[in-house]
Image 1 (cartoon, rainbow, N blue to C red):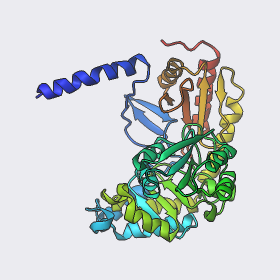
Image 2 (spheres, protein in one colour):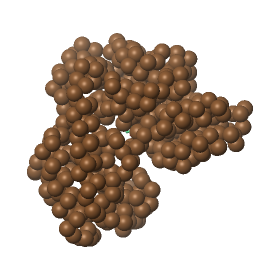
Image 3 (cartoon, rainbow, N blue to C red):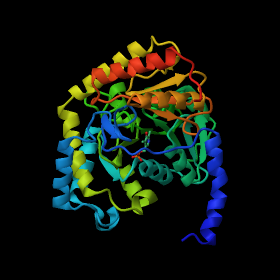
Image 4 (cartoon, rainbow, N blue to C red):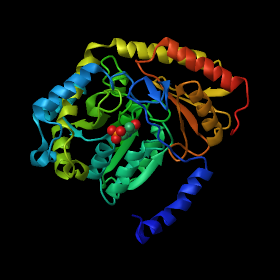
Amino acid sequence: MSGAGSADLDAALAPRLAERHAQARYRQRRTADRAGAHVHVDGRDVVNFCSNDYLGLAHDPRLGEALAASARRFGTGGGASHLVSGHLTPHAMLEQRLACWTGRERALLFSSGYQANTGTIAALTGRGDHVVHDRLNHASLLDGTRLAGARLHRFAHRDPAHAGQLLAGLDPARARLVVSDGVFSMDGDCADVTALAGQCRARGGWLMIDDAHGLGVLGARGAGTLEAQGVSADEVPVLVGTLGKALGTQGAFVAGSHTLIEALIQFSRPYVYTTSLSPALAGATLTALDIVRDEPERRTHLQTLIGAFRHAAERLPGIRLMPSDTPIQPLLVGRGSEAEVLALARRLADEGLWCTAIRPPTVPEGSARLRITLSAAHTHADLDRLLSALEYHCCSQELTDD
Ligand SMILES: *Cc1c(COP(=O)(O)O)cnc(C)c1O
C-alpha cells in the first residue's frame, strides 16, 4: 500500500521520532481494560495512580445506566452542531445545572476542555489584543492564544503582582484577558484567584479561570477553586470547567454572564464548527452532578488520602513533594532527569503501581516528575502499597537508567 508519497512522509518523520527516543521523551500508550483505580494492564492487576478520575465516577454503574438511558431516549450522537440541529434537551438541562452549580447566569457546553479553552480565548481576543498567562498554564490555553493571533504575555507562576505589572504596561484600548488554571494540572497547586481578581479590577483586565482539576473536588459543594477560596462569580467573568476529570464523563463548559455565552455562540469557531457533545454523555453528566451533590463523603475520603499521603511521603528521603493540597501530588526525584523518573516509574509498574512520568515539553526542562493522582476510589491499603514501594525504591538505591 505504501506508495512513494507514504515512503517520503515516513522518511521525513523518522528522524523526529529518533530524536524523541534519544531524549528519553518518546511517549507510549498502554491499554487498560477499563477506567478506574483498579485496572488490568498488560496481563496484570495494577492500582492506577495517574488518572484524573478524582471522585471515582468514571466507572460508576449509575453513570453507565444514565448514559444508556439517555442514549435510548435522546440518541447516541447529536447528529449536527449545536447551531444546526444538534442542541438537544439533555444539553439544555445540563447547561442549566452547570450554571446553577457555579452560580452564573448561563453555561455553554463544549465537546472538550481543549475546545472550550481555545474557543473562548479566540472569541474574546484577536490580533493586537493581549492575553496574560501564568507560566504554567495548560497547553490548551496557550494554543487558544495562538489561534486568536493575540499577543502572549507570561507572569511568574502564582505571582498576581507580576500579572498586575504586565497588565499595567498594556494598551487599555485593547482587550486584555488574564488567564490561569485554578488548580495547576502538573503541579497541583492553586492560583490565588482573589489576588488575581484584585489585579484585574485595579488595572482593567478580564479574568478567566480554567478549573478543570478543581471542580468536583474543592469546596464544600465541590464547586471548585472559587468556592474553596470564597471568590464571587462577578470577580471571575469567565469560568471553564471540564467533565472528563472529577465528573467521570467527557466534555467541558464555559460559565458566565448571558452576554458572554451569547458572544461565544456567535464567535467561537471551536464551538460552532463541531458536532454537539453526545446527548448520552450529557445525560450521564447530570447523574454525575447528583452524585457530587449527594455524596460529599467522596471528597472527604479523598482529602483524608491526600493528608495521609503527604504526611508519609514528606518523611521519605530521596524524593521531594511539591506544595499541593489537591489530589495531584507530583514527586520530584533525584535531579529531575527524564531517565531517573522513567526508571522509578518502571520499578513501580513492576509492582503493579501505575504512575506516569511527566516529561518536558509538558513540564519545564529539568523538572521531569512522577505525577501521582489520588482518587476517592483508592483505599488506604492502596496508598500503603504505594508508600512502601516509594520508600524501597527511592531510599535504598540509586535510580539509574537501567
Ligand atoms: C485536562 C485539561 C484541559 C483539557 O480538557 P479536556 O476535556 O481533556 O480536553 C484543559 N485545562 C486543564 C487545566 C486541563 O487539565
